[in-house]
Length: 267
Image (cartoon, rainbow, N blue to C red; front, side, top):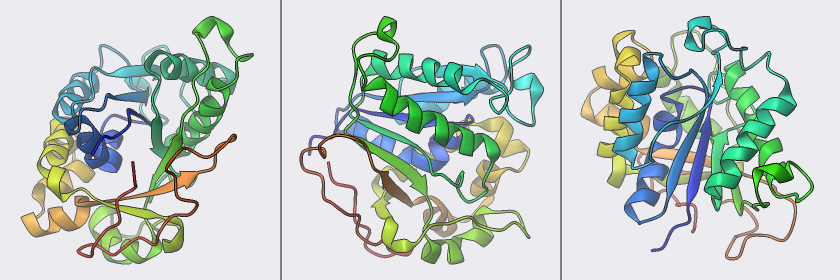
């Protein structure tokens, strides 16, 4: 099956692998062009080589960095503004440049809540991405960055309520609330055929494995729990202006719980 070119836009190194590594690997294996833009961390910091290794596992090319600092880690981009403090117009412009250079058919990013954890960098990246996708389609916005590009589908990586009841104890630290969306708003993607590549990408983020963040919990999990934690991805479709993408269905099908038969987002 021919799949469209796709660009991921995520807040931190490792978000791309955890949230959408299966989708990215699926599209790359099918011959589509794939790329990832990371909003925080800068060249010369220890996480960028890890990101490069992860993207190589996924077939997503070299890192593309917006160059801002992580909200809680100023050394992630020495001398640069935190993503949360950067002027919104500046950040949108940087991402429009990436969109017009790569010209994806699909874009995938964080949901409006910032995923289960609600990380403020995730929420800010969602806002920047939604604005940049719309701006990139308008000939009058940033004409110096190249011709307009209309994205056919904007997908938001998320977790539905039903799956989260099972997965939150595995994915979140004890006591943290899970931010989720209604099951009927999501589509589930069974990424088990690409789970090996997804996990290799996750584990390429060695510093996160070693400090016991989610990549570390995945590394320590049993094979069965790894499938439960990472073998399904869920997406919402964000509405875009203009006519619907050819072949699009008007509404998403309900997501399935882990282990069930997942409906894959159609090409």
